[in-house]
Image (cartoon, rainbow, N blue to C red; front, top):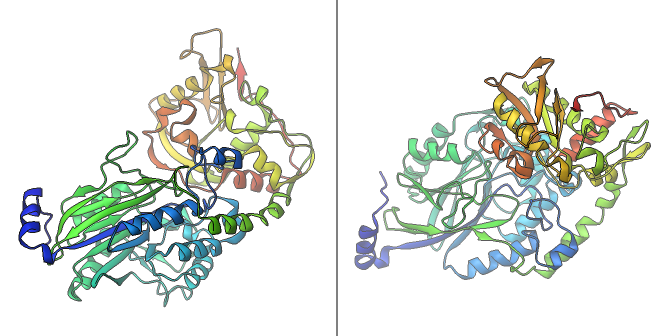
Length: 518
């Protein structure tokens, strides 16, 4: 069994066996979600003006620079990804996996695991992506033998060489990918621990003693895998969008998080950080030191000019999508801030209804949309995707989670707490109704809360859908941060709304008294 040496032992080893040491820098990303263009501090689109003022983060052009600089700091380095390159912006809608493959090849990745969103359009799009990339795409905890598109293509693990040493890479994807995406009926998913141990044993038998798991399974699952397996040196994570750091007050844990002999890392999402873990191994493949910190890809990181030009070129055809007619509405859908931040509004009902309809078959009962996320109205007649994107420009994704009725009540109180200021936290809802009285002090304004036609039960756990901004505490919804079974990475809210409009066209906007002011 490998062992992680103490600092004292590491120093002794360094002084006595320096020639046997092997140093490796593991550069890593995860949950990029087609954010080829820079993003704002809210992880949504960022204007050229704000970008010019240094207010934006990430983007492929900055990643090219950051990765080149990191490689220059190391004698031996690899670049790997923790999954979910697919889905999240119009770039994916238009190019599917093609632009992701192009950019990942340019960046020089050495391997990635399959994320659940890589299956959003079935095995066919994943296979096309795999055919286009110059590196292995891996997934150990699934049986793809009955899926012709992947059976002879998608490996469980691989071995690469760097600096004369063999490094084993093992892929891992969520065990519930069949519920989160569309892998089809020919693939079955299995427990991550057994899958990883099986590949570790096989690689170890081949003489590979440096093993890295690329895991799109979430921070908690990664800790379980580390605790319940032997022989894994590093887990590069994804799926939970966890920022691991030794300096940020937003970090979910240290970078790396040590569980036994295994170092776990993850670098948030959307290309906002580049993970940089420096690992030292002894001749037997034991880690003697593991240290590092995610690098913030902010305005101080220069853009690579050629990459920026290529992304601008790729963005040009998206105007065709923005002009595409996706639905028809029988009347204007009012989404002005004066309404949607103060009372029930027709656009709020549309969006909340669309959210709830999308996930109702998962047992979700309540939808909550912040009024500040609604940015425009839509005129009567044909509805273009551009109009929908003007209403919902933030690239927010659907989030599902579970909280008690007491937490729902607290959320509603937060939503009306700054009503006088026209704050964006005002809650538009579906599946429920409520009343509020602004003459009362903030924190005691909500009454008559009904869910599914029955009074809310403060002790009951309800399933809720919102957007990822609200679920993660945006607009004061901090009470949702500790929600149970949270999944923040569903489809884009604009796409969900457009599809609902199309399915119910010509759409007739309405209000029905679900929100009343006393």
